[in-house]
Amino acid sequence: MELKINFLVVGLTSLVPLLIGFVWYNPKVFGKAWMEVCGFDEAKMNEGFNMPLVFGLTLVLGFFLSFSLTAMVIHQMGLFSMLQNHAADAAAQKIFNDTMSTYGNEFRTFKHGALHGTIGAITVALPVLGINALFERRGFKYIGIHLGYWVVTMLLMGGIICQFA
Image (cartoon, rainbow, N blue to C red; front, side):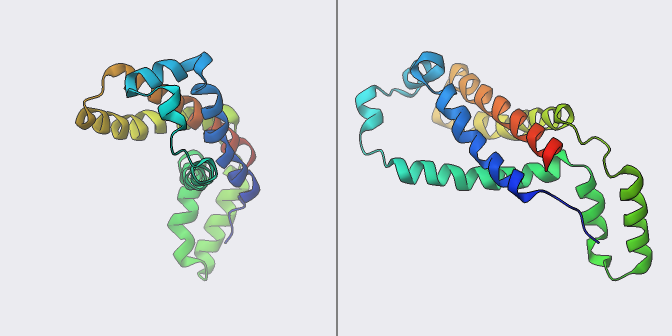
């Protein structure tokens, strides 16, 4: 029993948070507003910034996100996870093979993955951001800037994964 996932694509989508972050948090886009709501200035931003560590960890965390989004945007993962403990069972193997040959490419489009990426951003990223913002006493502008970033990021990641992985 095998579900073919292109792990190269899943790995490459780990770059999306970094790439979107370069644009989103650029001072010409939302960078100035973000620094303002966080109480940062250019000097404070460069103070003690370990670029290789930050970018490296962003890639690792981006991989975790890509991997978890795969299960969210590719519906066939549900069937696979439901039957994987019964891989040696001929009946389960037949159910899996028959279902995948008939429906294996259903909902495997960029548009569908983008929809689920957006839903994930709203139902996962927003609550996490919102709760943190409440306890940090941050305003709606703070939440909006970050939520916008995560919606765009997860929309693109979900679309790419669903279409190509």
